[in-house]
Amino acid sequence: MQVDDFDKKILCEIQKDASLSVSAIAERVSLSPTPCWRRLQRLEREGFIDGRVTLLNQERVGLELTVFVMIRTNQHNRAWLERFNAAVGKFPEIVEVNRLAGEYDYLLKVITRNNAAYDTFYKNFIDEIELSDVTSCFSMEQIKYSTELPLGVIA
Image 1 (tube, one colour):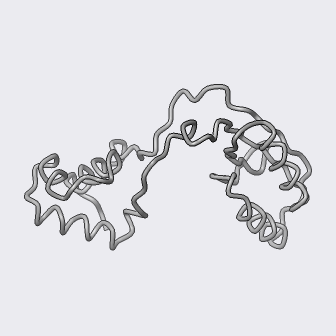
Image 2 (spheres, rainbow, N blue to C red):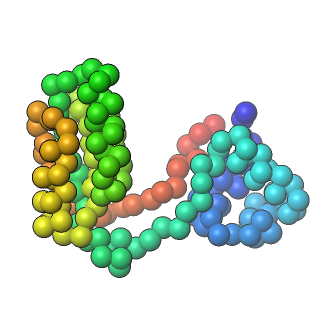
């Protein structure tokens, strides 16, 4: 299904604030509440909306360290991939995993309390799965962070 301009506007609004009422969304996108509600229901039913969350302040909750972990492996078979997927699933500190093309095979985003907590995580993680190279890059400052998809760039 294609999305029209009203659908895009609705999606943009709920990306900014998922707690908005249907009436508030309708007002912001220039629709009446009932058609807006129907569109929201359809967008959710058709898989455009994966879920609604509350974003927490990472530092305020005591998770002050973000580490990007670049991984190389010599194993590129299905069995290893299944073990890797199972291993990353065991660690709540791993909040994002991407398979890459290029010099590294995987990029993990890991969030922990501090260096000591990361060291513990690291030792436990490398015990779980065989890796050929692990490089940890510690974030010094987050310049930009957004959970909003850039819907304005799609036709």
